[in-house]
Image (cartoon, rainbow, N blue to C red; front, side):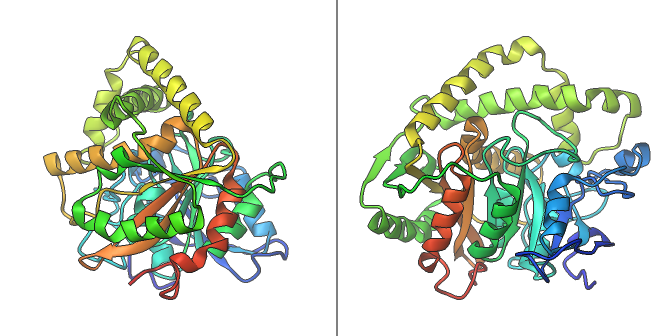
Length: 400
């Protein structure tokens, strides 16, 4: 395999299709956190690789795709233990963003997004806890999907923060994004009603830089033409900053509960940023999260009632284009915080979100996101495919 964009940590890892089906002849990659029988997942860190055995079984999500006629083609790069959204890895290097080589690809499903954007595979699996499918998809100009929490089996996937972790996927067109969803998602209760209300979260839009908002707003206008009942609202009167603080605290506590024992025992070498976040997580105590858990419960109930089965929420996926490849320190922290204020909306509520590659600024991709109600995953993906002409008029998912 030609891995010119450094998407893969193990490009030679392949599995043939086991049966024929709707994915016949297609190739897919998986983030190197999925169990594949006989393969040792790195989770983006050499010490993890050193201290863990090869998998005895293959994750059921992969088994389903193989049974539908697709072939596995490579294990893709990830940020260390999935605890980043940049795609930078101090040990294995940073994959190259095919549509913006001077910028980061986004993470932690960095290699998966790059493999799709580069055309090395047709689609790819990743995981999304805080934005790890949505952010790299937007940065690399491909479609990305985070499902309703719990909608796709997580067996055989290295966890990060279990109450937020999801299996997500990327593709270069909406039709394939839907096909993969039809295989991984359980059949939904029949709902013949169309989406009839569009919600525009102005506080989320205030997080987008002016150039990105200018490019994305015409697509919102097109959505308003399709769904005549459109409303503007303030999603978080208390501030998305407060929502993010709830997300970070609960996530950080779960992360340390999940990996703290291994980190304390093995003292793994972590790269810049990653090490600091794990250290911060180690200082959290259960009592720190009790109020935040209640806040999440309130946010979750509010958004699920707001969207129900017939409403869509439209927001920018990311504040702007991907930062430069060498971003670090305070600049990286500020970018992460702003990005996570957008990503935590679906994270806290556990709702499905699709990011669409609908534009570019200064030659780099940006993304527009649509969030639906709980369990409306396939309905959302079908709706996106039905209206694909709104954002694929220039010939595909990769807007250039």
